[in-house]
Image (cartoon, rainbow, N blue to C red; front, side):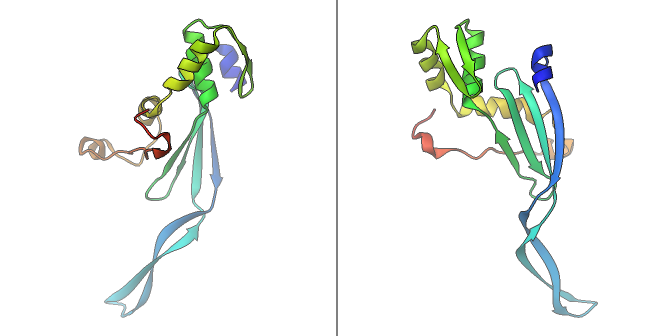
Length: 162
């Protein structure tokens, strides 16, 4: 990530894979005959591969997207609002001294406060829209043409339409 930043590159920086515990529906034969088996289903622990896509995004800086190679193919997006605010301040020409996860000082505190207040679900949606088309997906082109795609969960903690 640091090398990509030094080189001014944006994109996927690293891909990691790890087997991690997940809860999934599993089916198993529960009676019947070989010609007509009866099945039961229950949630069980499984250890499928999880893939981590570490990205450097022009709007968000360092971030990562995690997905699991097991239906229903959940996706988790990890973003840092401080990093987003730093990118927005840079683009607006606002001088600041950065900390690892925040700001030490800023030339225009009111402008930075306005930037921070403007962060909304739309910014997260735009991030996902950029990366969803670039990363591997279980959805085929035909699936996407039929309207199948990921939908981000909404965060109702904001209390308004931010």
